[in-house]
Amino acid sequence: MQALAAASKTVDCLKIVHSLHAYFLLPGDIDVPIIYQVHRIRDGNSFAIRRVDAIQKGNVVFTLLASFQKEEEGFDHQEALMPTVPEPEKLLSMEELRERRLTDPRLPRTYRNKVATTKFIPWPIEIRFCEPSTGTNQTKSPPSLRYWFRAKGELSDDQALHRCVAAFTSDLMFISVSLNPHRKKGLKPTSVSLDHAMWFHRPLRADDWLLCVMESPSAYNARGFCSGRMFNRKGELVVSLTQEGLIRKAKAPNSALKPKL
Image (tube, rainbow, N blue to C red):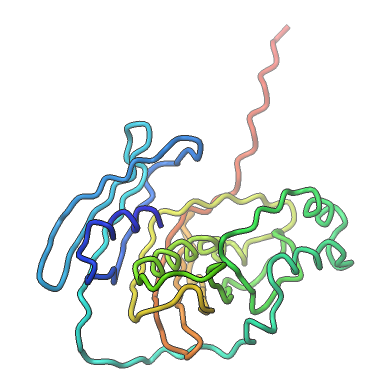
């Protein structure tokens, strides 16, 4: 989100991001500031392209290539259909789901205790799952996820801001979908994003409910692949997205070597 915001600030305000491709190159450190360096690749009459390098400790840890377009009249069609799901007003918030899981007898007591003792840090995004899970993070489930989301609070009419919020939300749970069919008791997986791509088809408002539909059609060679779509409440397709990530079993910590005495 920060890299896209940085790129947007260097482009003519009439041009709005329509696609982005991001690569996660090195692990970042949340305790160290990040410098976002914007490179002006092209400035045309209709399009502009920017590359953003996120630099930390002198190293490029992330790079983004984004294309911006001036709005114009054109052909319009949509084949993708929004799935039938409950309205967001009829679904529980994440805070309500957490309270319910604390007392759900179907969940192991050890899991409920862990939920109760883990500090809950709310996101700036309100999320409501269409099919709330009754299992744990070690319960096998289909490689798919559907949820409504919106920013908490009203946003300005700046379309660049709304697209930045959609980009931020898209990465919160995306790659974890590819782990769903492999979850089992005792398994401790790790996942890291490798690359991420988005196409913005139509204007959107991130402070109104958007439906995110995600699935993982394949995982192989320690990489999980996910694709997704975002619809507004009218059923219009506003965003398409893909992501690939590294998914592995967590390595057991090395035991200290004992002296041979």
